[in-house]
Image 1 (spheres, helix red, strand yellow):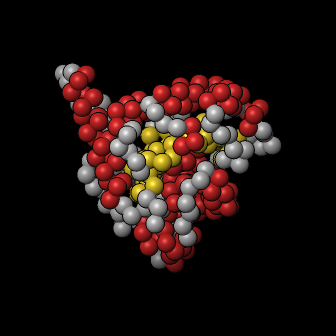
Image 2: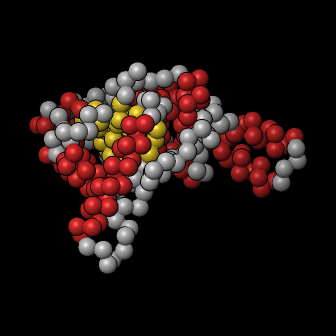
Image 3: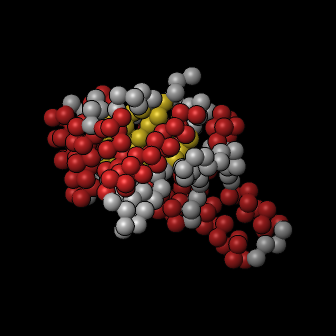
Length: 268
C-alpha cells in the first residue's frame, strides 16, 4: 500500500477552497488534519520561540500522518501557509512521504496572486515542480482554465508545473451550503452519513419542526454534493491521488473511528 502525505494549500477563504481537502479526502481516505491555532502563544513570546512552537506543532501533524496506513491530507489555510512552507523548507530532505502538494486557486485576482506567491515559495523550499499540482476552484461554466486563471497559467508554464484542464471544481452553491450547515462532506459523499435517512426518522418519530427544518436544508445540500460526486472522483484521479472505494472509506474513516491524536485537529 502506498503511503502518501499530501499538503493542500488554500489561496483564499472561499467555500470551495475550504471544502477542497474534504472532497479529496472522500476519495483518498487516510487522515485529514488541519493546523490549529499556530502563532497563538501570546504577545510576550518572542519570534524564535514562536517559530520553534510552530515547527513542533507541524511536526506533530506530520508524525500523526505517518502513523496512518494511507497517510492523508494536511489542509493548510492561508493563515498558516507561511509556517507550513517554512517547515517544508527546513525539513524537505526528511519529509519523504510528502510526495504531492496541491495549491487551490480561485479566479479572483487576489487568490491568483496569493497562489503564485505560494507556488514561488514552495519551489524555493526545494519541492520539485513534478510534485506540485494546481486545483482550479470556482470555475465559471464553460470557462477555459487559460482564460479564467491567466496569472497562474503563465507562472506554471515558466516554473514547469503542469496545469491540467480537468483538475477543476466548477462554481457551485453546494460548497457554501455544506460549510454553512457544518456538514461532514467526505462522510456524506461516502454514504457514511445520510441526512435523508435522518429526516425520515425525525418525521416518523415526531421530532420538533425546528429540527426537521434544519435536516431538510441539509438534505438539499447533500443532494447537491452527491449530484457532482463523479466530478470529485475524476478531479482526485487527475491530481494523481490514489482513490479507494466507498466501502473501504467507511471502514477506515467513518465518523467516530478517527480520534484526535498528538496536537492535531481532525476535520469531519
